[in-house]
Image (cartoon, rainbow, N blue to C red; front, side, top):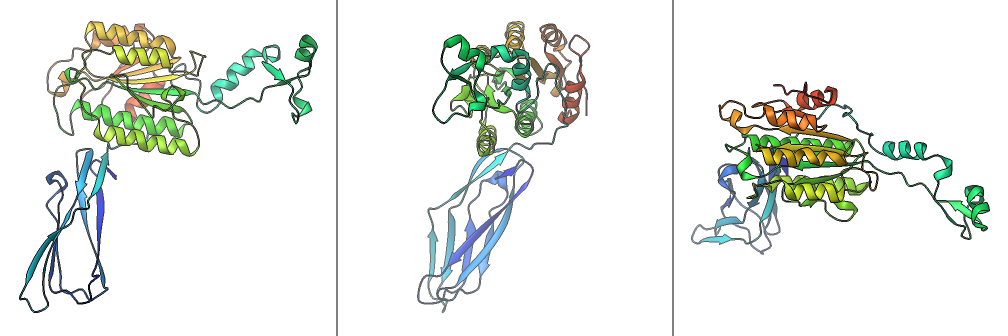
Length: 366
């Protein structure tokens, strides 16, 4: 795959499995028009058992999933008397993911931190008396015996092994068709998709357990753990899955954010059962009064909530209509920033990290 606006190199390998050499070979690979013109090649002669490799480059400014092939081959016999055209059936798929950009390392207001920080803080607050022990099992390290609980229960009790916890982060992407105006690679919706992709990669690198959520209520990765990614190699797999999802995400026909609200409230944006150590980052399109109230209430389960609001009318030259919506989100505890046309997301991200909670938070142009 490749990012939107980037190039991918496609390589074709041919082998002559017949016992005689070929004559002139003309090759044409089928590619969608958005990737460029169909590549054509001419090979003079391929001996019996011989192999040839040719390559070409494709480029797309539009994310998506595109078929490459099948290959069409036209050949003549060595004497030029017979011409044969053959089309193969095999094809590959090129996935063009959203373009991303590196983001500065900032701490969002109320954020507990990445890997383990939130759990360490809660353990420190809990103190020794709040340790939850279990019954001793043969082979347990005697250094883990919890003597106070042993005396209380009359049998040998040991401390449970503390598993490092990963603070959870939810990246919410509003895909409602009615929330965006305009189309194309420079539209407000494409900006939101690209920014969501950049955010996902950034918070994964910071050690968070991450999920991608849309207004439909669907989440990715979506397997257990409330739909959040796990650690280790699974983080890389989750990143690939989420980027592949964003490569093909389109507009939903939904009118509201109710399903996303339910997913945030039921799954929890923070650590399981903590309700306050998570991070919620949302990319909203146009919000009416009802959906603004819905979005404002999502904040209650997250210690840090950041909203990037795209008033898509401004992207088509109309005056802004978002200031009152931004004020309501800030009053509910969100760090809310307006996204002007063509804004540099890395700069907005830095502003979000430095922004105080309250009505003074504003957007900026990169």
